[in-house]
Image 1: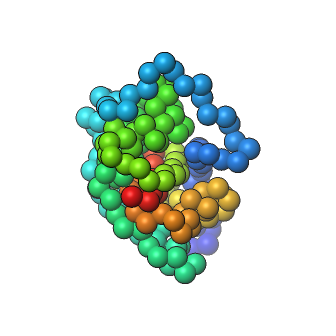
Image 2: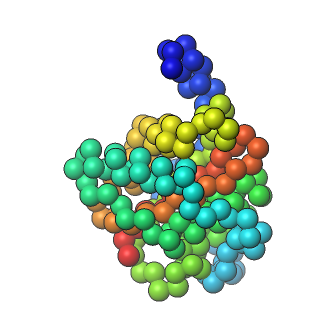
Length: 191
């Protein structure tokens, strides 16, 4: 691919949001409502959540390539993390928000407990909403989209910290598409 075309694609590719839970100096955690569900996920998002697909696998592969390059063991894929991540991405796409907490104020920990009630490990989350030529489903290889996303996360100290945390041994990536926007949630955990 020519340099001009690559620059054009890169310029057209923008991350709408790169936020993550527990960012140092980031926004404060929302005030907890009286009740946050620890046993259910948003119904509409649960119904539309995509299963494991080529892009989610390519993203975990790109994260693992980054970890291995740094001498860190790769993450093992986990179906429960993938499901919780996919539901959150579908929720962001369906309700048009970008954040670690949904409008019901359910965050990563609450979502994890809804799919894995016995979960007692550590958890971190990276999210993104991607728009532009690379995010369009037609003609874009999942590996190219995943590598572009992971490159952006490597450039962010907090996202990079989550990706390279040696305590995390399992991971799950969930995506959702809404028009030309791709919503991505990645969960990192210790069991």
